[in-house]
Length: 358
Image (cartoon, rainbow, N blue to C red; front, side, top):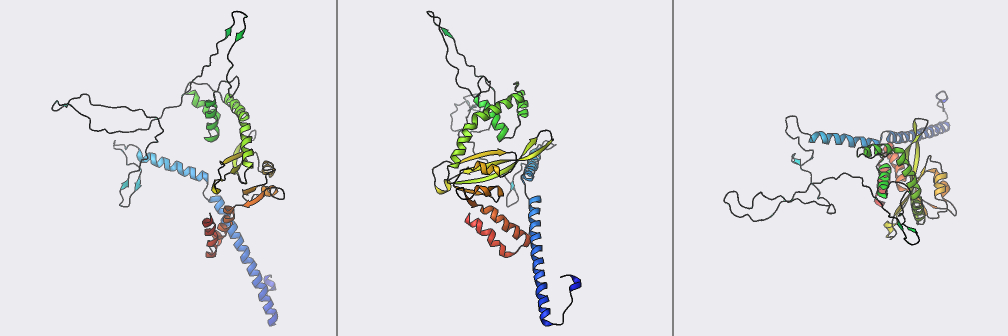
């Protein structure tokens, strides 16, 4: 109802009708305001909430503070070690965990320079010992496995004989399996690019060009493909699968920018219901988030799929397809948005009950 239409009628029945219309408009306006407040709260949390980048930056700040707190003071006195503060205000010394038993131990025994007492000249006898353990690091080192295969010939028929070369990860290549595993773990698990690995190896006097290691990675990928396919088949034999995707930055050659790619993860873990089958995780990569990827990966799977509300999974479910298992965590987020936007006490049970069920 527009302001110029707001004319109070003399008829009581028309007045009641006008009040009803105004109350309806006011209710709709309140609903719209509440909806906008909830959306704004969700957008603010998404924009300014805790992110992994912020957490990493905080860790770097804490590291710098800890380093500064343990540096030697200018006057030569050692700075106070950064520790927790006890209830009485005194610094609490950190508790040291014992070093693991599986580590190799090199023992050095230090004895007095003489077996006789320096005061009276009497014989010294051992009554105990004090042991101090320090953790040392031996840098990784390169070794060369030299495979020698002598050639033999028969003195009678001049036939040659030689032992066959054992199977190697890359035929006619130099890298051993341990070196290949190290390069792959550094690149994919520790996010260390190949050119940086090349610089690290150069300090050891080893010339490994980035392009050479790139060839190793490509051939190792081909070598590991049957294993990845076997893991995928094993995961899809499970009664239930947990599915999710993670955005990753991918270089876009020619554009001097990055684009958002996806790593799709499918997990089979039946340990919560006392299954003896081991858990496994199956990964797939795509350059975008189109629905064709999860539909193709889960083609033929007839079990339960535990996933979020991504619309790309809609075609995964249906008759003669997988069955949907909704994610309680994602459902709870909707209640969190409502509670953060309204602060209605009645919304708290919806936040507490899923945690108790978990």
